Image 1 (cartoon, rainbow, N blue to C red):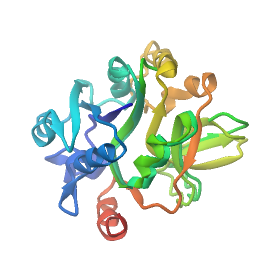
Image 2 (spheres, rainbow, N blue to C red; image 1 turned 180 degrees about the vertical axis):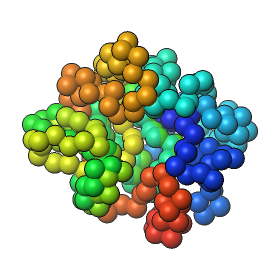
Image 3 (tube, one colour; image 1 turned 60 degrees about the vertical axis):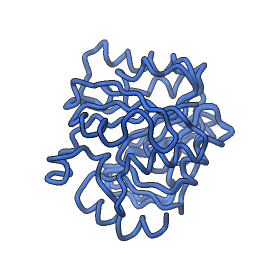
Image 4 (tube, rainbow, N blue to C red; image 1 turned 120 degrees about the horizontal axis):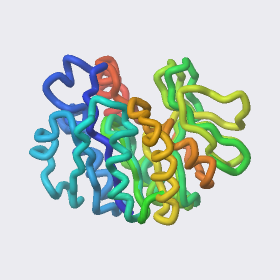
Length: 293
């Protein structure tokens, strides 16, 4: 299993913090988010990661190089990093050659969160926080019934999350071959991307909630995909790329994937984590999340 970390974006909502550095190099407690990611990946025995870079990419390369915290690193460049994150995941399709964990790069999280994703019984799995109070901005994971591709197992990760290592461990060790993490304790403000579940299957990952669902929680920004199902990820994205819809977020580009593949979810409510989108999120990370890691 390997990881794909999406770290190409500008992070304009964090200016002036990100005016001179990418979000994944923000320091929380004297350590960058990206460094924390790599430590967490190593803790769940993931030794290879591909980082999709764009904005101020030279700073990321200088910070972690080709090997850091026991993880071998390679890079893919998104020259259109000012567009939606779907462009970054589309660039990363060439790295979908194993079981993968796809990760946003702007989350501070407890390691147990990743452990749950990796250990999930679902071969394709999302993490979700089902305690969130929705405000309309969250990207929700929606599950209906028993449902929530690439050439190897992968973990896809956003690069701006501060998290406890247990969070990553849960993802990597999840019995679900395809799996999402979700926080079911989060209070929704409208910024969260919610995991929506019907039955035991993820049916959507979006800020817009459907009328029918059984469980919903905020998506952490990490997705586990089984190698055999990576082609479904590429196919789902291609449907939007062919329509020249470059400005959308990658979560919205996975709708067909959720319809074609049974994707499970792992709840991580109660574990410390936060996505970092605004200056006040940095303060929250330092004061509320970091002491619990």
